[in-house]
Image (cartoon, rainbow, N blue to C red):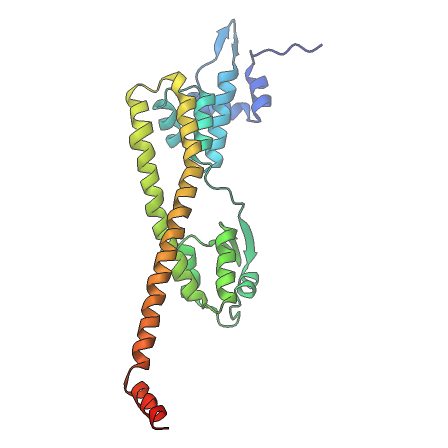
Amino acid sequence: MQVVTDRLTIDELARRTGMTVRNIRAHQSRGLLPPPEIEGRTGYYGPEHAARLDLIAEMQADGFNLAAIKRLLENTAGSESEVLGFKRALLGWEEEEPEFVTADELAERLRLDPDAPDPRLLKRSIEAGFLVDLGGGNFEVPSPTLFRAAEELRDLGVPPRTAVAVLEQIERSSREIAGSFVRLFLDQVWRPFAEAGQPEDDWPKVRETLERLRPLAADAVLAVFRRAMSEATEERFGKELESGARGRRGPRGRAERQARARG
C-alpha cells in the first residue's frame, strides 16, 4: 500500500504540479513561492506550495505577468486555495469558447465581397474586439454569440458596417453597466473586507458574493433592457405613426378627400 504524504521534495512537487524544477526554483528566487522546510540537506514542500504553484500557473495562462502575480500575492491575506477560488470567481464571467475562422470563411458567413474587402470595416471590427487578427488570414472570434448576431442582422438586410456600429454601441453601454456592478462590489464588499484585514474566515463569503453577483447582474440587465426596449419601440413607432397621419392630412390628403366628396 502506497503511503501518501503532504511532505514533498522539489522533484515530487514538480511531478504533482506539472512544473519543472527549474521554474519552481525561479519562482522561489522571485519571492513568489515560500521557502521549503529544511531537514538535514533536503527541502520539503507542502500542500500550500502546490496550491501556490497552481495559482501562479493559472494566472499566467490568463495573461497575468509575474510582477502582477507577485503584487496580488503580497496584497492578499488569504490562503492560496482561497485566493485561487476567488480569482476563478473573479474571472468566471467569460463562458464562451472562441471560434476560429479564415478570411474566406469570414467573407462567406457575412456575405462580404472577397474580391473587394473593406479594410476599414475589418480594422474597426478588430479595434472593437469582435475579431482578433492571428495573422496569415486567420482570425479568432472571441464571442461567437456576437458573431451570430452579426450574421442574423446580415440576413435581415442590415449592411455589415451598420451591424458593427450597432454592436459597438452595445459594447460601450455594456462596459458602463459592468463598471457600475464592479464599483458596487468594490465599495460594498471588497473594501470593507480589505479594511478589516481580509479575515481568513470571510474569504468564502466574499467569493460567494462575487459568484452570486454574476447571475444577479445578468438578470437585472435583461429586465431593464426589456423594459427600455418596450418603451423605446412604443415611443419611436408612435412618432412614426403620428408622422404618417400628418402626411395624410397634408395638401394631397385634403385633395383626395375633396375629390371623394365631389364624386
